[in-house]
Length: 77
Image (cartoon, rainbow, N blue to C red; front, side):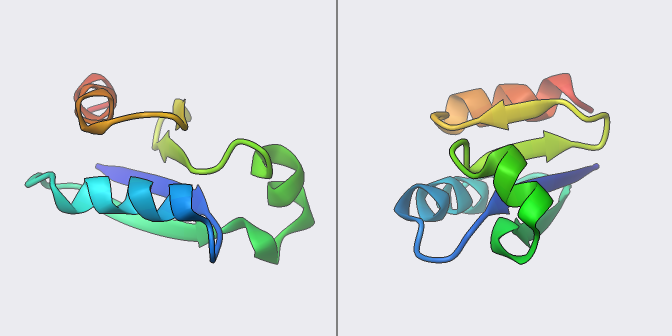
């Protein structure tokens, strides 16, 4: 399973979201995408980051906690 984390540098909420992934012992691939490199991504996610996206296209936007993230992963397997 592959997940994408949309975030950007110097975003304390993004850092909090990324730290949640370190608490999950699971088998998934996590791709970090910095939205600052794309005007399209800034327009889409600029005020919503951090956002986790599954391979199927489902998204989990901030705020979320560890339990919500685990449920999102489970539901998108």
